[in-house]
Length: 327
Image (cartoon, rainbow, N blue to C red; front, side, top):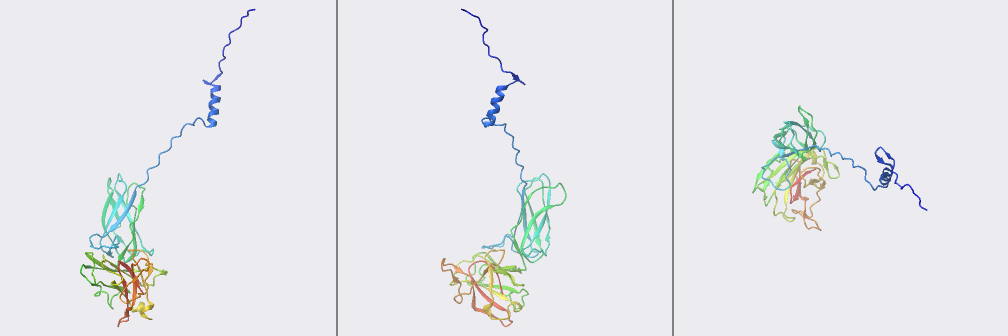
């Protein structure tokens, strides 16, 4: 028996808002399962970092070698200052030059205390001076002058000592400072360099600075003037050292035996005098490190003495540039 039937037709899916309900369901399920990534959200670009503005200072052309500090100048002497920016500004920018010092209380004035960086330039130069005798002077750039405010990251100069006295000696000199370090010297401490082999650099420098702030183990004694010697020393050994005589005024070192007084020193050109010099084991010689065999600076108490004026003369045997004080 034959029969007729209506051909089956696939019923279209009901469409909602132009989308297949099934497709929407499948897509939603896949999204839940993490098989379809959500549209990426555009990341905001990192803001451009502010330029770095740094200060450096120097006193070039002194003819010295060794642990030479960036600045070797008496209070009031000229100092070369360079201000550098990591990128140029589109306008002239005047920067103030702030000063901090080791003891936290600046007594001096930096002159001039501003420097202008011209538009489109990344470097500016100035000759400045600092008026006071102080240790650890640091110069930091800050926003100054008029105009549109700017943002930048400041970088300070390396610390330097503003000196009380400074002497330079030419190559070939073997005794240095004897004419200025005497019983009439106004500083509590001063130095006389005894250099039997002279020095290899074009010049040597001998200076006195401000009172030392930190000695090994704690604060230095009030009035302990820093003495500094700089030169390229060659040929000196523990058996044949150079000698720096620390003259300590009788007001500071006039009582008790000479061997009760100490030398505090460092080989660094700034910062604390963090080492106490041991006593020399042999007269006229430096000590020897038993491990490395290198010379070790020491105080020769056999040669040390007190002069007719009552000042104490501490004989410090060494082979490298040194900063120190004796009391």
